[in-house]
Each structure stands twice: as structure tokens, then as C-alpha cells.
Length: 343
Image (cartoon, rainbow, N blue to C red; front, side):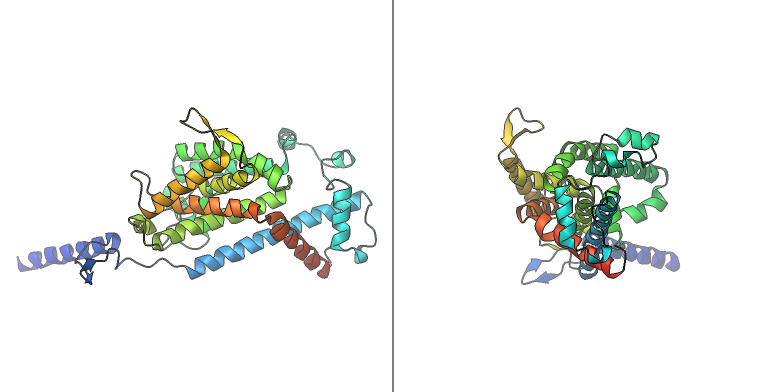
């Protein structure tokens, strides 16, 4: 009898402690006469995830820039435009590239050298950024199916929970959707806006677009990761919620599009009138900020990633990322490849 009573007391204490750990409930802790919610919550790591995202973003830009430089050099060799490889400079490569229209691998001089197959035939009418976008969307659909079939083993590598997930899920979580509505919306929205942004902001360069897409996926996930640490009304509980999806990347595309076409008018869903793109982006930013700081019923997640995406996309175009980020990356890649004897 006594043992059973002690067991019930022990279980009750354990449940109370666990509930307190997860929700912040439990005995009140007062400081200066006010309750401090979430004081016992596990901390959200900041330094290591931030370092991971910075290193990954720099690495992916360098890798994509190196592939871009290697493609240009290979195409220049096929056209016999560059000789004496030891005397090449980056300025020579840029001069020839602009003079001959970027050494496009789809030019008539090279079409006969590539094996045609059903996939290349199907994608022959698409630009490199469009092919990359379609590839990412195909991955999203595939991962959604895999997550539905084996959620237990799959989700741990593609869901990011701020308080305990490994750093690499900041990237992989961008390729997972847990419901068909979210996957369909992101797919439709990305197809609508990504090709225009790629053509106008990245000169149709698939490598530049891929570097921006992948780095932005990690950066927006980091924004959502850090958001629960802010002094918000209810967002602090999101440190326990899994995050995923490419909505942050889409918002980065919208931010970039808003800077490129600030006065262009567009139709807005559930609205009968047209609005300027910059007004739509501004209204969306205010909406996400309210959701982050105060909270919006039935929509308590994703505000950090979407707000970060808008900021990153608009800043990249406003401060000319083509000149200050991509071109320096290409130059560093060229010099590194030349030092290693790869060009």
C-alpha cells in the first residue's frame, strides 16, 4: 500500500517536472514581482549553427563559382579562344566571356558533342536556373513521399528542432514538406517567380542561382532557429517545434523581385485589385514581424524564416550581390584552381 502510494507520488512529480521542462509551467519564479515564463527552457544554441551556416554559404559559393569558371574555360578551349594556359588571367577569361556571349554550352558548335537522351530532350528548352528549380522541386516531392512512407527514420534528418537537431538539418529541412498543401504552394510560387529572378538578377547563370538558392535555404533556416530566443510573446515555444520547407527561399525570391520591379503591379490572392510589388513585400514583412513578436492565431511558425528571406533577398539585389559576392567568388576560385594546376 505504502509502496503504491510512493510510486504514484514519484510518477506525478516526474510528469510535473517534464511538463515544466517542455512548457515552462510549474512553480512560479518571480523577479521584482513578475513571472518569468520559459526560465527553465533548454537554451537554443547560437554560435555553432551560425558558424555552420557561414562556412556552408561560403563553401557553396566557392564550389559553384569554381564549377562556373571550369565551364567557361572548357568552352573557351573548345572554341580555341584561349591558348598558353599558364598566361591566362581572370580578366582575360572575363573579356572573352563577355565578347562571345558567355561560352554557352547550348551553342551550335557544341550540340553535336553531347549525347541526347529523353531527359535532356525534355529539358532542352529550359535555362540552367529553370532546370535547377525543377530539380529542387522534384526533390521536394520525392522527400515528401519518403517522409510519408518512413517518417520515423526520415524526419530526424530532414526536420530541424532548434534545441537538439544537428546543424546539417538547417539545410536539409529546406527540402521537406509535411503536407501536400505546403508542398504545392511552394512549388507553384517558386515556378512563378524564380525564373524571372534568375534571368534578371543572376543573368541566367545556373551556378550563381544555385549558390544563392542553397545558401539562402540555410540562412533562412538559421533565422527561424534563432527566432525563439527573441523576447517574443509566444514564439519562444517554437524551439521545440520542427521546422522545414522552402518558404524562406521563396520569400528571398520575392524580396529580390521587389527590388528589381518595385513599381510593377501584381495581382494578390484574395484581392480584386492590383498592388505594387514593393507594397506587397512591405505588407508581408509587417505581417511576419507581427507574427514573430506578438503572434497570429493558427499561424505560429515560419515567421523567422520568411522575414529573414525577405531581408536576404532584397539586400542581395540592393547591394549588388553580383558584383560584391559572385564576382569575387569567381576570382578566388580561378586563382585557387590555377594555383593547383586545374586550369
